[in-house]
Image (cartoon, rainbow, N blue to C red; front, side, top):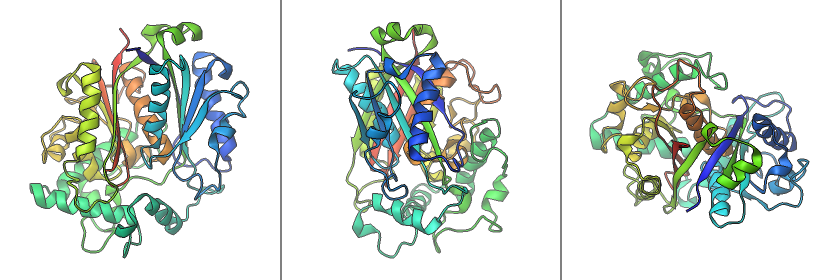
Length: 401
């Protein structure tokens, strides 16, 4: 099987993109990534773009056509992909599949989301409604903010099933805010919290749904942002003039989709996610024990715990304990979400999966801030989801030997 490498990564600061339009965002993503390795966009064989809310919030379709406006990309095979919050990861796999099929040797995967207006303001009720479109229609009734409600139910089930406490899950948010302090691209870089802050109901911190345990500090951010990766085969690296030792290998990946309806599925032990992660490990020829860097989809802190279990760093029910014991810290057993995660780095939906892979690659290259650098980073896993633990994209990265 052909080897695939990450030749370049570029992202915006996460938070607000102000007056930038969708065409400008896409152009900046491509141009910025190409500048990282000093190549023109015309050197790329194909492109894929992932976004979730481009129709509902930006009134824009045919994103591939906007990518084609970047000088050098016109007339090349491109597509837009949507897999809810796993859209970015899906865009990366789209490029990888083309390469494995022998249809390309170089390509760029772009992910973005513009969720705020030109003044940086958001319409919370509108965003809550349009994100609800990524749930099963039968599970929306009676839920004002559909996804926080669905994951509040997941959190309640996790606490009840395993005897985990809200304080245990609060450790995840606290560690991620601490990580975000040193990530110059993180949305919540200037905010620091303690476990007591995360538990205390006052100010902005409140229970999101009455009678359920999810609080504001358990939630990811509403975020603007973009990210892009250039992928290449060995032949592609030669064409781009990029040395293999300056790259990271996309050594394994897996993708799976479970039924959209949450009811009736075991979301605490998600079958599709676990299958996708096993596939990624098998393709990479390594085990979870080999991984000491990970970026997982903590749209809510309970997913930080479940994600830790999916990547194989903890048995079911022990994911939160892994964080409480400090094992997920940058200098711990496996640095998980050293970027700050979705909770503190931010969650520009379409960009999230791309940014996970990009940050993990930077870890393996030793290019993240020293405070966040995992010592002797040897292999990385990423876990990107969409919907109520429905769509899953998993990857394994290794240094390019």
